[in-house]
Amino acid sequence: MAEIIVAGAGHGGLVCAIKLARLGYSVTVFEKSQKCDMGLPQQDVFDKDTFTYIDLPSPKNITICKNQLTLVPLENNIAPLTLPQPVDEAIFMERKVLINYLLTLAEKSGVKIHYNCPVIEPIILGSRVAGVKTIAGDFYGDIIIDACGIDSPLRNNLPKFMNINREIKDFDAIYTYRAHFEKSPDVPDPDTYYDILVKEDGTVGFSWVVTEEDFVDILICRFKPLEQDEVLTELRKISEEYPHISKTFIRGGQYDKIPVCQPLGVLVADGYAAVGDSAFMTYPVKGSGISYSMKAGAILAEAIANDTNALYNTETLWEYQRRFFKEIGFTAGRLALLKNLMTYFTAQEINDILKTGIFTTEDLSQIMTNKLDNLFGATGRALIKDKIRQLRENVILKEKFSDFAVWMGKLAVTETYLPNKYDRKDVQKWVDRYNEFFDSIRKVAN
Image 1: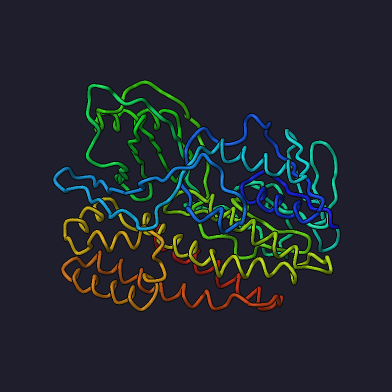
Image 2: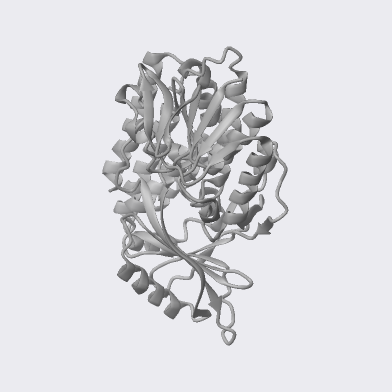
């Protein structure tokens, strides 16, 4: 059987490793961290169908979360807007528990994991990715799976002709601080559970306050690297607005960088496939790419197993590319388009939108959840046109929503260019249109 190398023990890479090892492949994972340092000390939300989709046993330590969002505008005279509880409940669990569960499954399945062994760069032989350079030496494999994360040293050092590497630009990533605090026993919980705090300028970022039964989860997100002074200032503001948050720190406090852009336009090359944050497989609205990455790992494993001639080249791996975009990637791209609205509308304009009352909670719920097929279809276009008509007295907002309607149409056209089978010219046409579309709306929005 083929020799599989997985660079980085990300969620998607581990799922792929587990499934391939169970099929008899020789699978080796090189991970930069120690095992005890794997996984952030926080809970995260992901789709409840994830383990059913990847056909692996579900861990016991998962619970149903409410995940009911409340948008909190800048002006106190505007009431917060709570969205309806999603019909499809999400689940959440501790990240450390989840990653250790996957690591245990991998080890039991026969995957060899080398901890504390960072990958430095790919080994390129001709037009093929043939191996990886690590601090422990050079290792060669029949296919290299890149699960190194947003700043992957593999992806960042691939030749340009592979059309995979893409520069991280402004607003493609958010920088976060997240921590849990005890609740004050003398102050009642707020009426709302999961508050999204709009900042003064959409290009700055946002924060959230999630009041759980035993603690308060605070996340601070910015589109530029966070400084400690900025975090402390924001924490003071939040504590003034939410007196039920005590000053007693429980855990967390980590700074992180998360992709919030569209997935890579091309995921594969000869001997190479990207998965997870290496391929920008995130959910920009929810902020978690766990489900996307794990599902993509399962799709990739199936594509590799289906390559009975063991070629593992762009042509045979294109099955992974095609299925990912059809089942996940197009939705992720549409969410990336919605994310650009954050940087296109100022907080004051969001206030103005809420003041008009033209968007109902059902409208916003459709935008904030998985009902994107409706939003980007005929029903969605009719909805946007109706809102534009209602905004006739606000020229600026009307113009911005008109731009968004045009973007929706252009993205729908762009999606049709994804080739069903690999052809170099067709792939070049696809990735050029795909990248150019998102670059064009970034220039307008920012």
